[in-house]
Image (cartoon, rainbow, N blue to C red; front, side, top):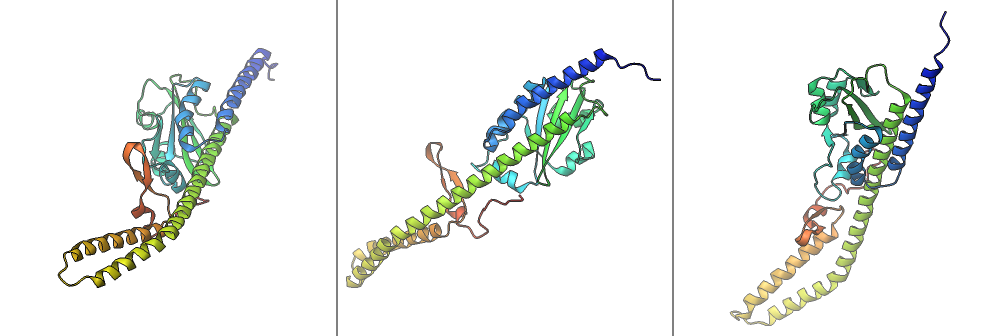
Amino acid sequence: MNGPPDIGALLEQARRNEEILRRTDQLEEFLLSPRALRPLLEGLCQRVAAIYGLDAVSLALADDHAGLRLALEADGPQALPAGCFHCARVELRMLVGDLERPLLSNRASDEALRFLFGQRGGLCSAAVLPLWSRGRWLGSLNLGSTSPERYHQGLETHFVRRLAAKTAHSLDAAVLYEQNRLFERREAAMEMAGAACHELAQPLTALALRLETLMRGLPEGDPLRGQMNSLTAEVDRVGELLRKISEVNRYVTKPYAQGLRIIDLRAASAAGKPSTPPEEA
């Protein structure tokens, strides 16, 4: 027969669970606060490490998630925040095997630890939490500890799954936020382009007709003809710019003076599908 339960051990386990729950609630306050993608990434790893007392935290981002990549490039190419890196699904699967459930281990290889955290750094145990939302793989949240007892096989709890689910939800919400922001920018760019074309087309047409009339009135060999031809060429150039503005269907920017960014007419009016926010991307 089994002996009576150890009341002290049960109370200690209850206390630990209560503390884990408190920390999880604290992290959820951060995760569930609406924010853009980059601010979320900039604070996530540091926040998780501080709340749970971890020695290393990293976030692997799926490199085949179109919506995630589009959101990351919303304000132009930028380096990923500290602790974040792009990861191919096949690479992570080779290290952890199953991407459907968290992996906890105190026997991770040096290769795996360097891949997940960039360095070995005395880490003895790690947890890899795959992030899934709406049936799409977003990446993984990776937790590292110098204690071999912190994470090991068979220790998985619902707290780990809860952390993965909340992180995935927050990441997916930030991606959708960025997609909607890009859509709104595109709509604003198209409205501005339409207004510019409407306001400029008539005076430009009148200017072209006036130049043509003046050219017909000049005798052959008149030195003013050369200047008039140059003016006509500039008017044609402005007309070509208006044509590009009228074809703007995407929000694409390029660097400008003093750190500003302006719409890249060539790229924004290039042939192709408009960058509407893909719901399933």
